[in-house]
Length: 257
Length: 65
Image 1: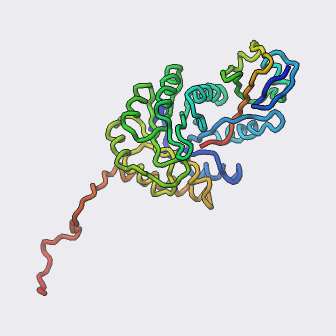
Image 2: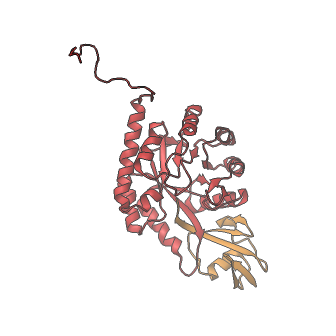
Image 3: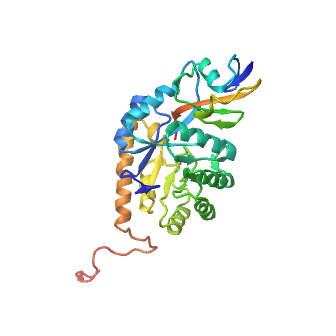
């Protein structure tokens, strides 16, 4: 799997927020096998300098970081945040979020496309957090995105894949663009289902961070994602409405009754 | 001169962004900055002069999903 020319072997991208402690975050990252972790940027206090400690911690993990524009509600905010992230983290990668609705944290897809175009023209490698809408996805690709990250369900909702049909259609429509289900995943079976659809990777955070045993859950997700990928490659059966006996009928003894 | 640092009013004698950041505890810190909503790259901080009422945003890495 490759994002913007960077080859990765793990198909799990892990968020770094909401863990009970940095030590548990480190354990979960290790157990997940993730090679990419998402990070954010927030106001820093000159007295506490909390961000400095966190940055040292992340650098010690030795992983690639994918900074986000979480919480941005306008194109201007998202673009400015992306510039700050590029300088701070030294990467052209940006997980672009432009939020349009506070209850569902649904992307503002109009602002998203505009921000993606501005950033792509400025040399950013954009990972847009979007919906499963095909036309929006097409616009994002036209804007220069070479990865798409449709939601499974609203962020942190743990509802899984709300629109299987839409996600399948997106996969069929964009066979050559890496697709990552980002947000809404609750349990490993949700992640496996996304991978069985042929998605390239899964990005999750809360499902691991807020599990009773984050490291254990990270391992469970890693296995589910691998299982789902193997199942996709092995070409699963299509569902059918009627039964089809697995045991051969021919040769069955005739016993009457 | 009164400026706003991450939304809080602060008094500073510094006339440049770089000077204000040093005076406000950010010397050698890994940060990114904006003034009045516009990104100011690290290399441009010294040449960025401040005016009364300017709003400075200083951000650093933090956990994210």
